[in-house]
Image (cartoon, rainbow over all chains, first blue to last red):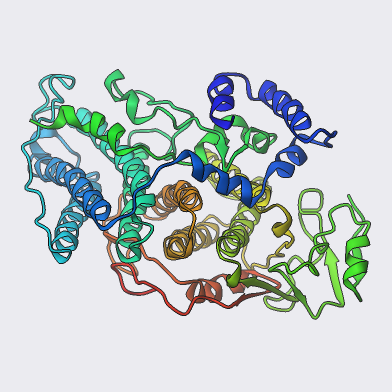
Length: 275
Length: 259
């Protein structure tokens, strides 16, 4: 029900949504409710949160953990190589000296993540996947990009795309790690660092640090899948638009929660970058 | 403005009969995780209509205990998160209220206003999700913090955001429902976005790494702190005594091995 509500309501003015939600909750409860917030609260309970479980199918075996680690390693290879080449070509691209510390910092982190993930995979008796070759033009979607002269702006665009993707990718895999606490905790401590990176790159580009609705802002159209679904305003089975009343509106409600992507969704996003 | 009420509590029945508009004690006797000890005298505040709160500014730890009973599993973890979001939401609400007398730039005000929106939404979302288990309200205290002073406010904001990230990262291992783990993940990355933005306002484009690093991302791995480490760091801002009970004996460290 919630998913349908979100799909139907997401493009509607939040005030209209509020009215609908209130009405809907009244129906659901068979009783009058005092306020929109009270309506939302009345529906809110742990059982509702738990009910959301039934919509998700998660495997949580040792093989799943390894699969997550190898998947994360692919993403980190992509990011590490991107920043390695970017920093190596900083002068050519025209990265201002004042901006360079941002990229050297992120570069170091991504390479550390690669090493850490390789270590975790090895520790589990498996062999880390090898680094593939990458195509940073994304099969021509970023025509001519080669870390070349005057391409700093494009470099920033790709950095934002990769960081915002990384946040959603790790988030989407957390559930598969729930029975492996060391890997879960390690993955989460990478996940939030990716969010810090995303915040910095977005603000460097003059954007908000957080994602509003499903907006890709000024990124090219082929990146839209990175932002699709970020306009979700239903959490734990509760449509939260009323919480934006006098508090930033529906935009703030969507900004306040980053949304996960499935492995398949992330794979579709990064496949063009695989040579 | 609601009148500030004082309820003298002598029995659970009395709590259930309380007529206060938002009596937040009503479920204390029903095996709830939140107890106010000693349970004889407390104030009932309405944080929406009375932003100062009857206990605002009283010394840290001078109020009654607010117990988070971790034997309640995921509910306790969400209560723990709710407590932390209460602090953050309160803080940024006061930051905004002081804008008229503060020295923030317009761009900084936009950021801080957004953060306030997000934190209030987090608080209210947890309040809704917890349902009957949301029955506690923390009053805040900030010592001599000058809310009009940019430097002081940003330093405190940084503390809250970094602590929030570490708290979520460290508590996730105690969640047993995938849906709750995912919900925590949706919030922690927004807290991390906040943390980086606040840090960048303090030290723009800094690459300084480590525990004392000023960078937007001072470590390759964020910290993951156990509740027993987070609570003492949050307590200085809380009038009540935030009291973990039955906290898990085991804690799986993150890569920084400092939680």
